[in-house]
Image (cartoon, one colour):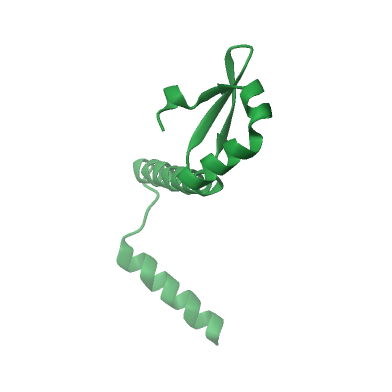
Length: 93
């Protein structure tokens, strides 16, 4: 659904709540709810929300990695894996 078609006033949500929830969950859509002509909330399928949150978490990790690289805070992969192997070995002893 296009966002232009997914914008509804709060009165529509109040009058059609069960229908809105059914449509959103079946189609994994997102709906923008307005109040006094102004966008106020987003109603979204939970699976779409979770995917969005996972994507944002991945983007944060990438941004942190980029910052670490710029600051020179990194190790070669071989060294990092060797350190991990040493830690695993120490934990097993």
